[in-house]
Amino acid sequence: MTATAAKRRIGILIGSTRPGRKGAQVARWVQERAARRGDAEFEVIDLLDHPLPHLDEPLPALTGRYEHAHTRAWSETVARCDGFVMVTPEYNASIPGVLKNAVDYLHAEWTGKPVGFVSYGVRGGVHAVRQLRALCELLTMRAVAPQVSFFLHTDFKDRTTLEPGDEHATALDALLDHVVARTTDERPPTPTRREADEAAVRRSVDALAAAIRAKDLDGLRRRYATDAVSFDIDPPLQHVGIDAKLKNWANVFTYFKNPAYEVRDLTPTVADDLAYAHAFGRLSGTLADGTQVDGMWVRATLCFRRTDGEWLITHDHVSVPLDIRDGKGVVDLEP
Image 1 (cartoon, one colour):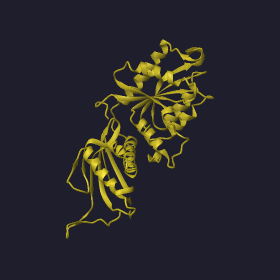
Image 2 (cartoon, helix red, strand yellow):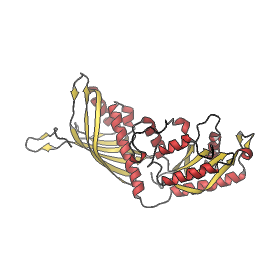
Image 3 (cartoon, rainbow, N blue to C red):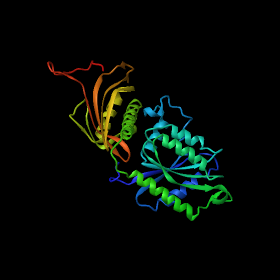
Image 4 (tube, one colour):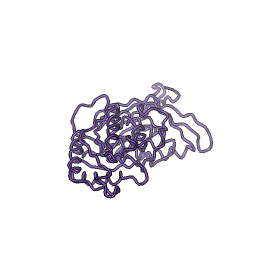
């Protein structure tokens, strides 16, 4: 999604899940103030809606390969945003552990995106912001200078209800000005941004394979554009539209009790809002009658279009080599 194609999306991240937290009302104030603007869209992202165990992924976030569904859901939420406002309390002169954990789960999804900070606490949360700013800059996020700090004794009535002054609204406006402006910077793609997009394409293929293994047609629907065109291994010459593609997968699932799907040598290439990838794929597993089949390796090419922050498949092409002498496909080769 480019700056000229749609409004930028800014996530307002509530960085605490503690009972009795004040972060929700602070985030609500940020959202209500931000809603007056016409240059971006704003959404509240609540860590309560993303229960993340203490980092439990077997591979480092830098790889962009996630095993658990909760990580993939968190990745998709963060990836669809072009910038962030992080709302954080201060616990013992530091940031909440749940926020640090949520940041540590991902890497490429944060990279290059602007971020501003709204904090609160006995000392205004300034120590928490100092640590959070260093963490975000380590991830090559672009932290903006303006920030908003609320003091528990002076900015919350009875230390409970937020009552922001005009100076806070002015500071927030400046913060949002900087965050939105940095999301609309037009600059050539950097290797870091390209790597982030390539990692997102890889996650899309991982999600596709996981949906196949789960015989999950709804999960597959989320991977394809509605106007997708497929050159699949079986007739006809082309399958046009997402419903035709899903009908093809539904037919496959009638044969398999437990399908397996393996991808090798996936190589993505990204340019702006378009991408393609080529790989080898193999569908195997247990048939409905209990027979175990190894399947065959096919060559696959996938074309993607970024739509509302998601990399959706607009075209796939699956084939096997042809033996010219007898006109039959060669299905016993391995990569």
